[in-house]
Length: 153
Picture 1 (cartoon, rainbow, N blue to C red):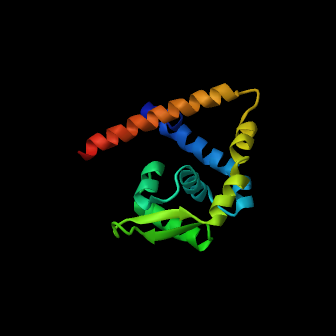
Picture 2: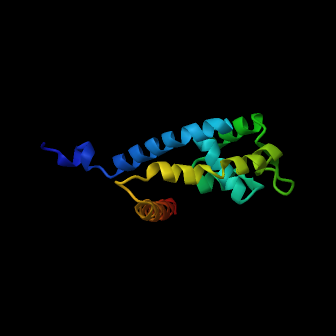
């Protein structure tokens, strides 16, 4: 092929994209039991770590735009998982807090990560290899976020 650089198998982004989609699919049976989607699960993990934060904080942690996060949060509010309210000190900010239902879901979700890790392990890939891969991806994400910040200045 004349344009080797354009072959799908030579791309860095495609394996990351494909792996992300396939792992997200692995989550589906677990999340269906909770009645939530993977993006909603990500929001919950952020809030289980730190409740009562702004939409901008959530968007920043998930590396998403606020216009992507806002409809997601509205659906979660309709499900009774979170509540949204304007900040008393700065009404431009919307604070997101877990409801009792959202807090209770933490207990139900606690088994998801170990079950997922167990399903991903086999003779071809070990837990240590998965952890190394996670660390490398986190390093790449940090690099790309820093690069993006530099470009915004």
